[in-house]
Image 1 (cartoon, rainbow, N blue to C red):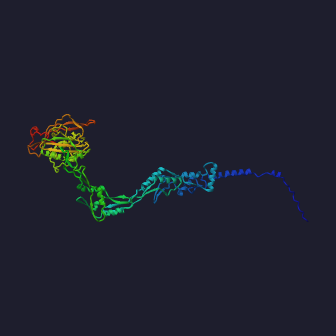
Image 2 (image 1 turned 120 degrees about the vertical axis):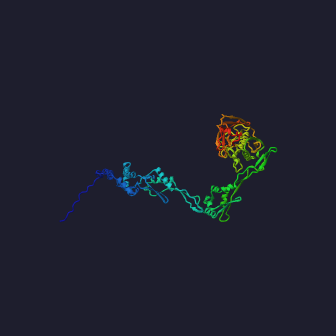
Image 3 (image 1 turned 90 degrees about the vertical axis):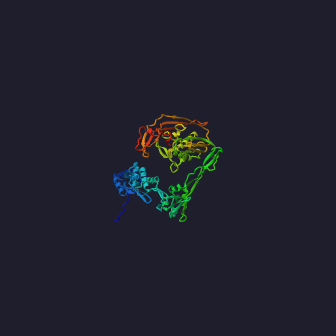
Length: 620
């Protein structure tokens, strides 16, 4: 049977309008679902990781994501990011390991872990979500938080510098006896603390931890002297054999063991130059100086009143001294084993006044003042001493504006220099001593300076009244000396030289001082003396003297009353205020002391068995 084709169902055509009435797909719902997913997924992600650091977070390259803050701390410590790790500072080949914190650098692990925890949880929600996702997709590295304490860092570097710093050392030579050794040069170094602090601060800011090799800044100073070779050669040549020092016609040996301690060095450019220590050489040269040196002395003159001219009575003498610096150079000039003779350098200093000087040259025109004192009753030894002491001042010149010292010109007072034993005042009492009578000279000189109106710089009265100085003069007009402690000084303020002449008349027991020069336009007057309460002498006493024969007596101390005395000098100069100079004297009372021979004490008052004292027979 034939199969009949089946008829196709009719095709219906929809109009465009019908198409527009067909329902569309639900896009708003999809968008809403997507939004829910965007919100829900991060929220779920956050909820899942609510107790841990978000994945992808690292600290200094160490992954800590997925770990709690406590676990992150343990992880960091395990890989070396340990807060207790020491800080190692380095200067070249030297290192210092310092405890964390005391170095001024400290890793704050908790703050670092908190910073890692804050990734994805800080800021606005969109920013937090973005940070969380970015950490998950691309990773997020947190730098360790390193604290910097400038004060602690400076203290640590100061301590390091104290152990590290050293000054530059110059090349030098040293002596072991006469052997010469060389000290090599050494570069100086010093820690640059400010620059090193800047490096530590930068390391902290960059999160560098652990700090295993932080290079510190160092300043190097090269030595100024690097070559000691020339000095070594010169020293060895000098010490090879003894030297001989010649000064004028005298010689002194200088062996190597005495020369070596004098040798020293000085820097000369970049090399060491041999030198001689001047102080040590001066000490060694003392015997040479004592033998050769002398002070220049002025010539001595008398003044011819008639001719108004100077008459030379003693020539002057040039001064001589050893030039220590010049002699040192002579020693250094010795070379090798040749001439070992060193000639000391002697310097000659001419006297300030030539022997041929004229009165006009020195401004000496006339007599300024002449003063005479008397010493009647003096023992022959005292008269001898007065004349000898006075001769030492005869013809002396005093420069303008100079302060004249009695002790500087009296010289040695001893038996060897010609003085004899006579009564002197010592510790306030009369005793036998060398030079009794010298104070007659100082007293007379004081009076000449007094009446010349010259400024008196230093003057001391005797301890008690001495009769010699009240012969024709008021009480309190004396001046004692006790070299070198007690002196008589006055100043030449005349503007010209003063020539001093002395004359001792032993028969008349008179001593005269004359001053020649340019007489100042001034008048000198004396007011006084003003005498205080007179203090009577204590009772007489007797002392046994084994040197006397039995029954022999001798008055060794006179009775004197004590007193306080003042003299006033009035100096009148035209056009200037009146000048008043007061000179005080305080005299102690003394009782009569009689010495008697042993075994024969005197009967009754000792004064009755003693001869009456000669006025002024005691004292200097």
